[in-house]
Image 1: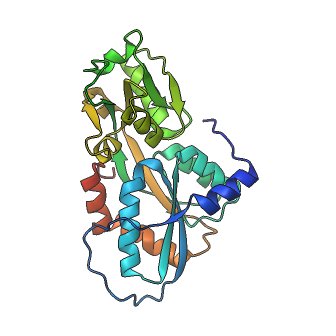
Image 2 (image 1 turned 180 degrees about the vertical axis):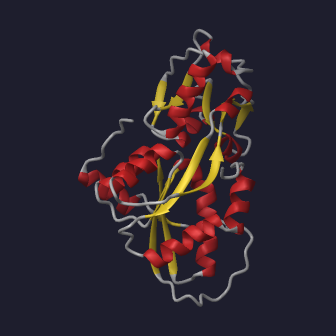
Image 3 (image 1 turned 90 degrees about the vertical axis):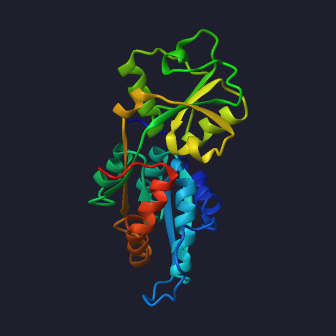
Length: 262
């Protein structure tokens, strides 16, 4: 799968500016003193569809380990994988599909990733549904403005597979670099419909209308996570991954609409 490469200066700027210390409300957990001696920063690159969940998990982990700051950067999984291959100092990578993770593991930068969630697509339309979209095949209606993820990112690859399997021809008005950009276009009424993950539709909190796509259950994205071999803070990185895979992480992912790991 071809992905867009980021220039070194752009990459450095992205890592410096786009990363943010997790500060969202955490899932229910009881703060406790950190007896493990963990400290420092853990840099996490995660698929855009994980934004709300990982913000919360990062905050929850920090409460349990006050000496550790979780720095989160989100985006299309393919572009994130390329950042890692190009040498970005990353501790943890969480992808929205296996292919971007394979890019990292084949480069020898990680091994044995763990599948921790699944996701499927759903149609979203602006409030009021001006395009009168009621089913997937409506995306072929003349004049309908449809926005999709670019095929180089997991949400776009899944959309392409779904549309091909169902025989629905679609000419999108734009192709976006991650699922949140698709959702934003629909929220802003710049498109009549878009295909996003069910978790992103849920995170929109009523700003869009959802249209069920029963056929989407045949195209499931698996989400793998891994600690990089050259992680600057391996001990804290492993602890964060264990937190994501543990009961608090599992509940947060379920509450957000993710499916269980295969």
